[in-house]
Length: 327
Image: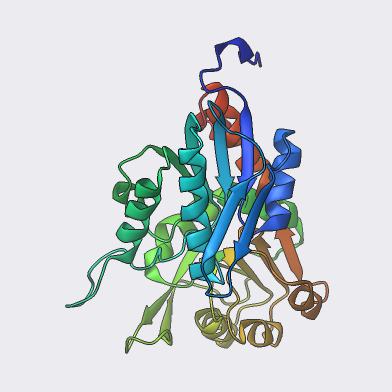
């Protein structure tokens, strides 16, 4: 592959990161072979944030890596202020790299008198000064339409599918099961990748709180290993219901797959007590060492850093991102 470095329009690659996912940001920097730019992020006693860059980004192609998981509002404001700081320092192009996008679930008015917060967040990113964005597995595909700036919407499921193919020989008649019907399409893609049939859990939410009611399995899981897939695990409630349900229906070993390990409140305590053989996730959201220890050897974290790094290199050099996935 020839790298047309003489065709660069935006100067060199400059990487910056908020405090949301330091380890992932460092891994991306290692992949791209560019250091993370120095910056001060100071919180004043009145909770206001102050940001200062250590060196100029004038005329450069800047990528700002910031995941917007907990603390959500701190991470979101950091990102917005960093984008504006880069903009006011005359960066040639600013790409907001969001391994995990907060408020991705508020993507439609599904009841009267509610906001579409995902659209608001997209507007804020643009107003702050981002020229492009990069996001991984947003909860809803239409989030792409909330941005007027171009972007790369990536998925970690190629990575997950690769790991499942590695595990496949030790599985007995595996079936991919999606935790709800909304995830059926993506689940089908995972099933196709490992040449397994698919089943679905039909789940009905009863109220506005996060608790949901899992009802039935559509499809056959009896005497089969089950690969449960979802895009994110928040409190672990839906996954717990799903695991118990497929076990009731005669499933053998259960593997739980998700891209974004939000693991809020007591999710980890809930997950480690489930009859699950293996949990597989990615590092879009950092998991504390204490939480990782609780899983013992049942947790596999696949890094999305090479994926993000490769897309940054291709975006910088004006090469196709779709080619990476034979698209």
